[in-house]
Length: 182
Image (cartoon, rainbow, N blue to C red; front, side):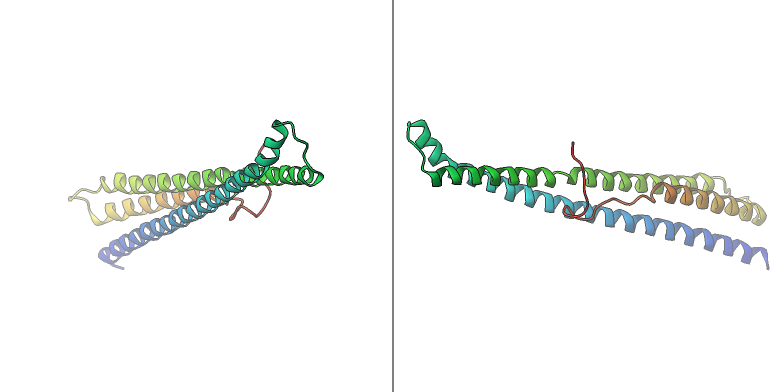
């Protein structure tokens, strides 16, 4: 194989590797950001519904509370309704608290996204640093050696980044799985 073909082969492999690496990480960044957005929308919707339900239940209790404040005696139905509403409020509060677990999941997604972006920036920095070593006077053999070193350095960085990012976020939606809040 001629020097020109060897050089072309190394350049092609390097550029393909950079392109593949960048595309994969940017696709994962996009996926993580979309998942984060969905979790936030779902959590905000659930929080809104539960807080509105709490408001409605508390408002419904107000009539009986006013009767008690005026010295009146609530009927057995009023007492039963107050007890039922108290249980409903507890359920709504628990549902609202559960909806707030999105913070843990979104933190995991954002942390992973930041690691990907940082890894990609370092990957491109390595490419730029090694590229600066190429001077117009460099011979084909020097360029082939440099390209081999760059390819090896980038492959190592890619593997290191992949190993750091293997851990998946534990939940996709707020209803799945168990998270202990306290």
